[in-house]
Image 1: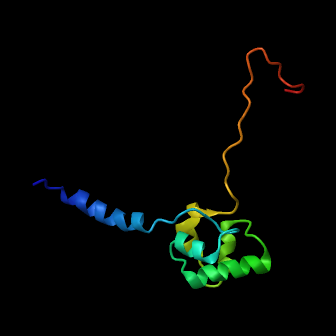
Image 2: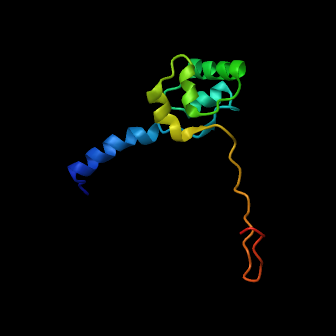
Length: 109
């Protein structure tokens, strides 16, 4: 039988709940209430409905901190979900043309 050190077991036990409840990235300006509720930690169906209602009445969110204007959403909830709160769709990065050795730099560079 393999015995794990107590410190490792404790660390794993403390980290596991955070991994289980990690937020999933979601565009709060486009997602429906059910998707927002599923994606963000601490946001249930009624708060997700309130996010969609605020967005409908006031237009898209320009920054994550504007979620504080929605009743029942505070700074701690925003901070816990900040990395998962998207304000625009993220597409693949545009290809950047690399200059060849013989290419001339545009005027002014």
